[in-house]
Amino acid sequence: MSKNMKISERLGALSIKNVTKVYDPEGVNVKAVDNCSMEIEGGEVCMIVGPSGCGKTTLLNSIAGFHSITEGSIHLDNELLCGPEKPIAAQGADRMVVFQHGALFPWKTLQENVAYGPTVQKTLGAKEAMSKAGDMLAEAGLGNFLTRYPGEVSSGMARRAEIVRALINDPKVLLLDEPYRAMDALTKQIMHESLLETYDRTGVTIFFITHDLEEAIFLGDKVHIVTTRPCQLKKTVEVKIPRPRSYETQSSEDFRKLLAEVNEAVHEEAVKAFQAGERELA
Amino acid sequence: MTNTNKTVLASLMGQTTLVRGISSILIFLMVWQIGALCDDWFGVDILAIGLVPPPTDVFVAFLEVIPKIGYWQSWVASFSRVLTGFIVAMIIGIPFGLLLAVNRYFRGIFFPPFEILRPIPPLAWVPASLIFWPTNEMSIAFVTFLGAFFTIVINVLGGARAINISYLRAAQSMGASQFDLFWKIILPGTLPSIFTGAAVGMGITWEVVLAAEMISGGGTQGGGGLGFFIWSSYMGGSLEQIVVGMISIGIAGYLSSSAIRKIGYLLMPWKRLF
Ligand SMILES: Nc1ncnc2c1ncn2[C@@H]1O[C@H](COP(=O)(O)OP(=O)(O)OP(=O)(O)O)[C@@H](O)[C@H]1O
Ligand SMILES: [Mg+2]
Image (cartoon, rainbow over all chains, first blue to last red; front, side):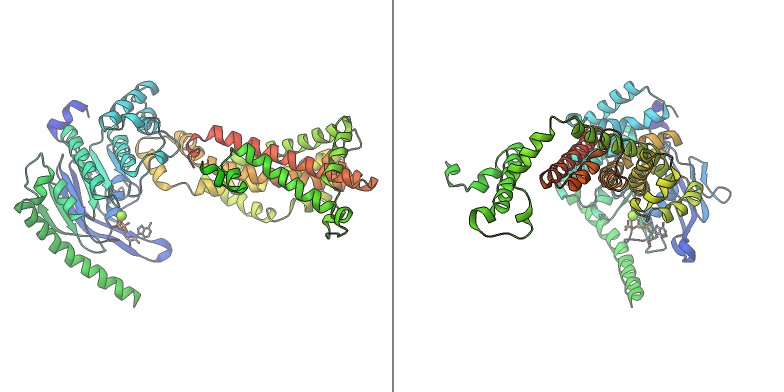
């Protein structure tokens, strides 16, 4: 897993095959994911969109190894992460998560947060880890905030720092769970530019959950639309807009067409989810 | 120039905390003085307050006890009891609470008896511990310890269980060992609750020590502590000295909680912003 090989060989292919996940809290079965399959190539930006509560986070948690899967299998670069014999994937730095509600350690400064991974893995000494963390944060435009605590910086900065904390571990796959939710349009734009720039530099595979359809098309190589719960792959839309992309692409004819296509599929599922919700309440 | 328009209150609020603190204490003393001397000055007695000695008399009584060694021995006696009970409670309570939080088996064995003993008020332990422990001093120490122990444990347990699971997941994904997880995530994540428990526990410790000193009559040696100081003032019929004792306890409690706040401030730099 040498750093230099990574971009050229495009590691980080995820193969999700027939995954089913049933939560079973005290006998009440909740089927969150049902026979879901997806192929994600190494170095691809794969966007997942689908209705609220449909099981997107559950799928991501299964990849990260935060909980078991009930059926099916997940492979990373042809190596088994989890499957019938091994229901729960081992957690590892090859798959780094950026959490839905943010998970920078509040008691560490941004720099200490980023240095945490290499320090506990002992890939770097404490000093080297700190200086590398400082460099990487500076690259992400956070050079003036190294000694700040997460509670002291804006949510946008915290998100960028959290992505840097993931990237310093040199993961094969970056798993992002609605990282830019509830951000204003302007901040989002800066976040997108920063993420695309990172992507161009590292070529890391990105698995990105979002509700924002424009974001999905703007960032993604593929947009996977999933059904309302239980989560299944409904439709995949390929985004053939060349990179590097800029904000002008959002007003192009191609972009509008793709948006309409994705919107139609998502809308169908949203209506189903809404009706299901009404049935549950009735 | 806007200053001239400000009321006394408004201009007071603009001052530093120190000035504000001193002024509010002075105002409090003034009201107390007027209340206590209402009968002499205006011929009207204000219920209850009329019986309280005015601050000037209390001040005189204070000046009388300050040179006396016995008064300071009371301070030392109470403080050392509080600190002993409190520190032992911290030393045992923090690891105990953390173990309850992280280990299922440990929790299964120790939590039920803990929960049965916890609701028993510390003072209800006094008679039993007077019998169990060979000396008065040891029984006081034990009851004091209990007062802080339960509060500290329940806070540590709650705090550790409430740590955001994403922190644990993030740390584990980054390759943290169980050791790292405990020392770098669970412990700092629980620190705010530890300090909440310590602050509340310290308050309970003072209550328990003073009550125990009154009940047991204190030690016979030198000073019996501030609780006994008040009690003997009551026996001697000195109203002023009772108030002196009460104020001493107030100051002692304030010093203790300030010390805890200060340590918390030093140990939790990320909390300074709130
Ligand atoms: N630990 C759990 N135990 C039981 N049910 C759960 C658990 N976690 C999630 N669920 C249920 O599984 C379903 C899918 O949840 P999940 O969080 O994966 O959805 P999501 O697509 O990420 O939603 P959102 O868009 O709101 O983030 C929901 O109905 C949820 O209530
Ligand atoms: Mg989710």
